[in-house]
Image 1 (cartoon, protein in one colour):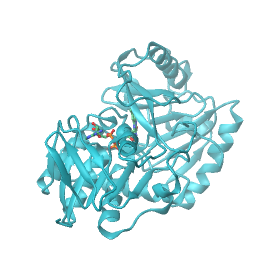
Image 2 (cartoon, rainbow, N blue to C red):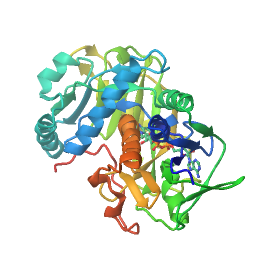
Image 3 (tube, rainbow, N blue to C red):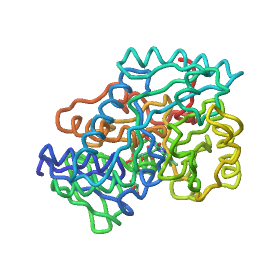
Length: 387
Ligand SMILES: Cc1cc2nc3c(=O)[nH]c(=O)nc-3n(C[C@H](O)[C@H](O)[C@H](O)COP(=O)(O)OP(=O)(O)OC[C@H]3O[C@@H](n4cnc5c(N)ncnc54)[C@H](O)[C@@H]3O)c2cc1C
């Protein structure tokens, strides 16, 4: 068998990046996608990107991802754009627990070289006057930005094909492991590869489990919405209200709002892709909490109506860290991003290529730290707690 043959399963932000980088490193890559490019979470994500992580490895991965996003943004042949925009996260008055957590996180992020700062209510009102400033403490990440995740994934798939990747859309696969080399099984038959990278998003655990390689990853449902056009879009940073449990960012001439994390394991083949009525109602309340009433900028009492809303699946692990590495000889897993997969995709895909080509993996993300049959609760990725 040609030792350089690699299959990547799943054409999301991570799978397309991994496929491209593997081809760039001389591997003969086939990228299998059950539906079309970006049909999974990558086509449904909010596109908030930041490096505000308190653990060294997370900060390094996010730093690399943002740097690569900026390089791609400056490349005229890559049809996609990255908009630099600060990311503010905050705890409201009376929420001493989350205020303490934010105050404790920021110096740890700074120690990893992140350009983040603590802000008090006056600082916040001065810099972001459209925000309601009833805050206990806020922090801002200066190097953050936002982007269209589906457009990134499409552009990266195109670049992967240009680099020699064979892209097979509408081709759901199964995995066979246990022989000397893993096999990918499609409706056309079985193909042997030196390495199979499973980056199948919410389907990853099922795909590997069916091949006798269980991993402790649970899909969970999250929701997002976009408002009608609003002048607030020009005046808002990217925002995470830790007290209210929602996030918000400008998108075009509207705002994108999200929360609705349901800590319930979902069947990746049977879940509701439409947003719930309770979520739509919550979004209006979130917008009022963020911008409503009297702010330093005047009276924003009229918050915009929602234009559309949707749901998608994210993936949780027992410790909140990803699973990125070899699950069995020749079988690589890349999932468990806890709602932070897009912002790290350029670095995660690159890490897959380094692991496959050089054997260099990141120990804290090693899938071998679990047996695969762990029971655990789903904890949402953006939660702000003291370490
Ligand atoms: C509403 C929402 C908001 C989000 N907001 C953000 C955000 O602001 N920032 C951020 O960083 N992240 C965000 N996320 C998370 C982000 O979308 C994911 O972490 C990321 O897109 C995962 O990318 P991926 O390539 O691993 O998986 P996916 O994009 O899910 O791709 C997996 C692909 O595998 C394919 N596949 C599955 N099974 C098979 C099979 N058997 N054979 C072949 N192909 C298969 C699927 O069709 C899919 O296209 C959000 C997610 C949602 C749903």
